[in-house]
Amino acid sequence: MNINAGVTTAKGGIHAAASFTLAGLEHEYGHHLQALQLGTYAYYTTIALPSLYNMAKDKLNHSSYWTEIDANRKAINYFGSGSDIAINPYNYPR
Image 1 (cartoon, rainbow, N blue to C red):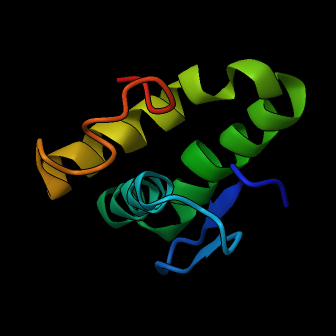
Image 2 (cartoon, rainbow, N blue to C red):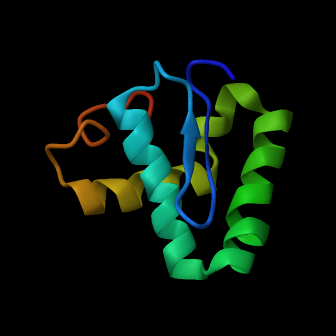
């Protein structure tokens, strides 16, 4: 797993490298919020699988994929404007 990689399960498990940043963890929590909104099946079919496919196909632009931007927005709404993800727009586009 590279330093910027993380995976979130629909039940809220976040799996990331020990060196993962707080903003990265907040982003992954945004994926958990997606799962809560959509439910387990829809999360995997609508968010997780398309996101993994996009990562494999276009790693350099993956952070701009709609599933990632949506997770960023959800995390910012949850953690607030002073959170690490909110003040780090370079790695976490909205």
